[in-house]
Image (cartoon, rainbow, N blue to C red; front, side, top):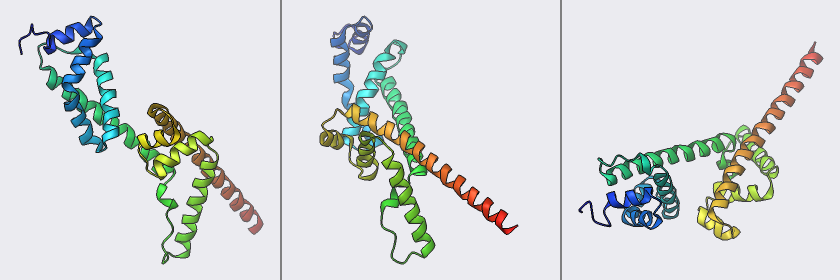
Length: 207
């Protein structure tokens, strides 16, 4: 496409840098599908890929001034998109691993019938800890975490059920996960402290 074409990337970028919003809208329209495909490969969910695509374009817009006009814009855009998808994946994985370490959502599943008494007791203790920690969350945060991490609903499904914007839902989930991990750490520390005190009393009694 000629450089002086009104729809050429070079022309549109220059217009964007001068504050022309319609020019940016045109760039998004031209490249949305390619960026969405990159996001979808990472996430595998249509609604989450759409959300991430919007975030990618927002970040690309903010960094548009760093684009070297001598490079191919589409190649640069896809490279940026992949890097942002990787960052997003790592961030989400870190959040989920944090919750998994603290919560272990599988604990809500019933213990196997042939499990031994120790396994059954450990299962019961984990469930009790999770429920106690969840009970300590504000109701709005508890509901968001349960719907997302335990019932595994999509952000859109949660937003529809709660009649909230997806951005609010995501914020509540992130805050809820952080608070849940804090609650569990506090409860475990209290349990360990109580256990240590009991052992100390037992040792003194033995003496």
